[in-house]
Image (tube, rainbow, N blue to C red; front, side, top):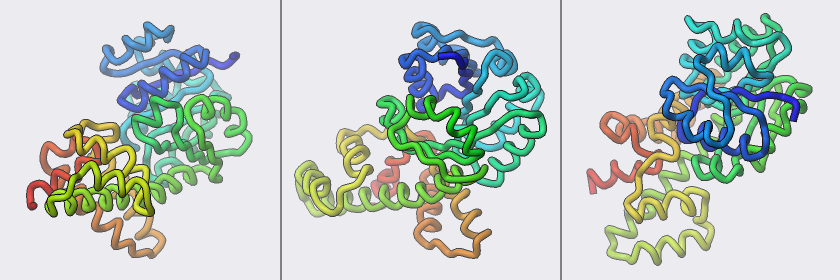
Amino acid sequence: MGKKLGFIGLGIMGTAMAENLLKKGYPLIAFNRSAHKTAALSKLGAEVAPSAAECAASCDVLLINLPDGPSIQELLFGPSATAQSLRSGSTVVIFSTIAPREAVQIARALGEKGINCLDAPVSGGDIGAKNASLSIMVGGERQIFDQQLDVFEALGKKISFMGKSGCGQMMKAVNQIAVALSVAAMTESLVLAKNAGLDQQAALEILQSGAAGSWSMSNYAPRILSGDLKPGFFAKHMLKDLQIVLEESRALGLSLPGANLMKELYQSLCEGPGAELGNHALIELYTRHC
C-alpha cells in the first residue's frame, strides 16, 4: 500500500481503529499526548511520532479522532501548527463528531493551504471500532472520498458519501437523535421490568426478539444487566453530540422535543461522575430516583 497514514487521537475508538489499519497492512505513524497509549500500536508495527507536527509531516493522510471541534482547531491551527506541517495535496480525515459548521470552517482553512479534508464521523461504538464494522458517514469532495475509500473500508462495513463538507457531520447529528432515544427506550424498559419483579434476563430476551429490538437492546442492555457501565462511548460525548443536534435544529427552525429531553437527561447524568461512564449509564439516573 503506497500511502502512509498518520493517526492522532488514541482514545477507546481511535486505538481500535488504528489497530485495524495496521492489521490491514497500512504503514502508520501515530501520536498521542498521553504517550503510553501508543505502546500497543508500536508492538503492532506503528511508528510513533514525537509530536503532532512530525506525525503530520510524515504522512499522506492524517486521521484525527479527538473529542471535539475546539481540540481539532487547536491541533491544526494552534501553537503546534500541525496544519503547517502537512504537505500540499495531502488529506485530513476527521473521524470526530463536531458541528457541521466547524467541519466546513476546517475544510475551508485547510483548502487554502492546498490540503484536502473529509469529515467522516462514525457510529458503532467500541464494538464497531474493534470489529471494523463501523458505519462511516462522509462529507467533502467526491473525488477525495473515492481516493480514501479503501481506508474507510478497512474500518467499517457501511460507508456512505453524504455530500459536501459538513454533510457527514449533519448525518451524524441525525444518527445521534435515534441513538439517544433508543438508549432511553432500552433504559425505561429495563427499569420497569426490574421494578415489576420480572426476570430481567427473560425480559431482555423477549425485547431483543421482537419489535422492541435495537442495537442498544442487543449491545448495551447485556452490559447493564452485568453491572458494566464502563464507556465504549462516553456519556459526556453523547451530551456534546446532542448539543450539536439542538444547535442545528434551531438553525433550521425545527423543534425536536425528544432530542431536548435527551439533552436534559444526559446533562443531569454528566453533572456528576456519570460523565465518565458509558452513554448506556443513563440508567444511573433512574436508579437514583426509583
